[in-house]
Length: 573
Image (cartoon, rainbow, N blue to C red; front, top):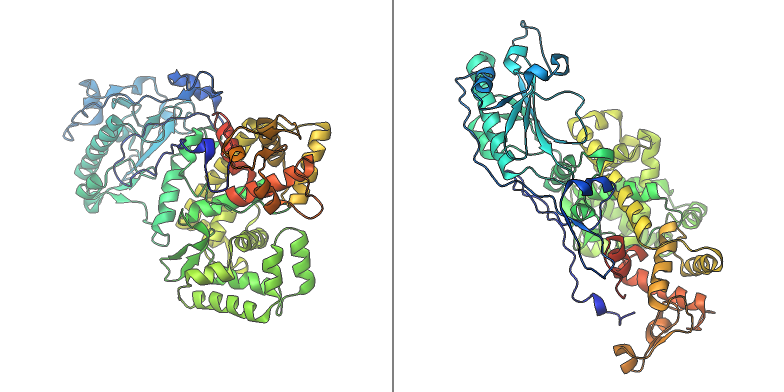
């Protein structure tokens, strides 16, 4: 263990994370992945190199993007079949069953829509695309949309395992192909004079082309914040098997992963935690101070905290407690782990309760709460409880599907006011789809940490860790059992009498001692009454666990545990 405030052996380490991609025309991102979330087989599809011969690191997988190539010019005066006959595009139409392609009767004179999306190589689409853009920019045609009178012209951007964004060659070729199709449609269909509709949920086509061709994208979702739109856009790219066949590193900056610095509540299930991550991921609070986020919504009101609570939702939470709050209900919520005791006790104080109600009403009236109000009236641990309670109330209205619950929370409506219409709107459908993907990613991240970051001990070791977690007030979950076991194994090899007499702490006269190698001052600060023996296994773990959770937010966020979860070597905490 290092001194509080110092990073110790962690000081030279830096976690590389993929930054959110730029909205508009996308350049490919280089991906360095030390661990795959859920698709080990995808490692075989890309070159691999060893990372650290004796450090216990896994192989790093680097998808290789093809060298950019200039996109071939497509002459809109020539039909697709003629371009194919000239070899400008590759013709696969003779081997593609036409029944798998969109087609319409000749009598249908409506304007076709161009549908552009990325598609994983190992996941054949339900409906065959008319065109496929390969990684090197080559275009293949499975069927001539003009001969088929297709009204939904599908353009598939082929994606390799581990790839998130299109290659430069694909971006250029997709722009050229969509420009060609748009020109052809406008030249052959008088109804397209006002523009050609396009669906581009993966944001492949450049804004410049959309503007020059007067393409009409799907509705702009005006009722969503820019942060939420970006979250939806990013999750749309995650379409692999099980929804999350991507390197773990690729998810680091997605959603709001890593911004929760409050321990899991007592009895908080993996599903509940995953749904909360989906809500936070769609809201995308400020990364540096997630719980103090205050953001104006397009509806003119403010949303606050890590989960983007509206004034209506905060009022609904308070109304659910009774007026005045029912002491028996509050005690029940404390025992269930839904409300932290300190915040629950404050709710019994009329002055505090009045201020919180006033803040909620101010938000309902369009007023902006202050940062101080957020810190004082709605602290971090309280927000976790409020989110859990609101989600429980939402289930009665929308069911327990993670995506629908996330969409219901993002609506800003009180649980009793949410309806099926909210989920079936353009915004609702996209929020629900993106929320489900974020939930899948959160669940996969949890499973990855469990698989890699330590093992669950048996017998006496498990009993002692369980006792220590309970005394420390930390949930006894598989993940926490693994994390503590890993820390103890690496710090002391399960020797309760271990004393480090050689490091900088020892030089200062405070050597690290016991199972979790705590120094005297730290142990004294985090030990609990009746458990003051630093060499006692349970006493030492109680203090070590409480210190780790206080400093890092959770046992899974301890640097050594996070490192091992990513396939790297353990480092001291």
